[in-house]
Length: 215
Image 1: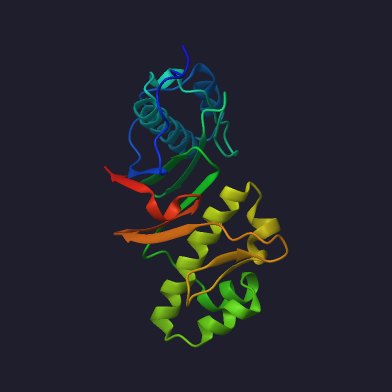
Image 2: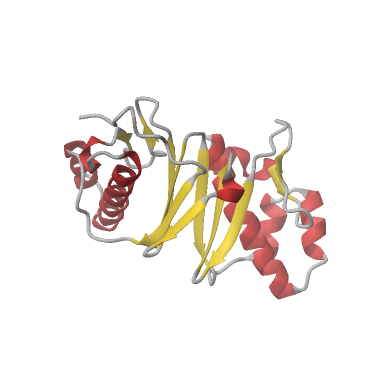
C-alpha cells in the first residue's frame, strides 16, 4: 500500500499536541529498533512513532502502516516518496508532532523547566540578543530565554543540522520576534506559543498559520 496520490496535502502546516500513549501501530523495523534500546528510551520511541504513524495516516488518507515513514532512533524522522516533511519533539509525557509539504521543525518544553538563565544565554546566545535580555526583569528574562530556546531548537530541526554546530548562530530579536541565522541569510517563518503546561515552537513556511490540534 502507498499514500493515495489523489489526497491533497493539508496546508498550512498541521500540528498535534498531546500525551505519549501506549504504542498501537509500529512497523516491524520500528519494533526491532525499539527493542534494542534501554527500557525508558524504548517506550518513548515506540509511543512517539506509533502516534506519528496514526496521525499521519489520518492526514494522508492511508493506513498507519502504509505511511512511508523512516524514523530510526536518534535521527530526525522523514517521509519517503515525496510525501512531505515531519518533525517531532517530546518532553516528559508530552509530544508535539508536525507535518508540512515543506521543511518544518518543532520543539516542546515544560514551562517550569529549570533553566540556568545567565549561563545559558551567555554561553549560547549571540551578543546582540544577550544585550536585549539583560534589559529585562529576572522573571521576564527567564521566559524570554525559554522562548528563544524552543524557537532555536525548532529552527535547527527545520535546518537539518545540530545544536552543537548551529545553536550559537541563531538569533531571536525579542522586539520583533524575528529569528535569523548569522552567516547563512536564513530568516524562516516562526511561531511560539503557550499551551499550559507547555511552551512550543514551530519553524518553517506557513508556521504563523499552522493548525494546532490538542488531544
